[in-house]
Length: 162
Image (cartoon, rainbow, N blue to C red):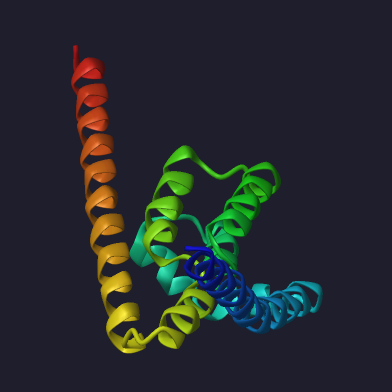
């Protein structure tokens, strides 16, 4: 009984340390690259070249940098960037909602893809599925928000005719 318990304990400890080592190898370099991109304003340059994405998703151009941060760094870092952008650029509630709809299924793409790839998941299939869910959900909610705004405008126009 003691031998079995020690074997399980040994496997748990060494298995956990192996996973932690793998995570450190992936996450620390990503965080360093992301910080360099922020410090040298590369994210802003990338934002200018990819502003068609914000039009497609139905968010303001100021939402793209937090989206990029969330996609590459993770949902918690992306959420912090969204909070910062809300205060700096006065993002609307709809912008924040749509950004989070997109980020939740698609956060930390590089990091999580590498982690799942290391345990045998097909990375192309993983990214494709996550992108499909993110786009489908975000575009659905964009459509619902536009529908709500159109209804409010029609109600407002009807009330001004009286």
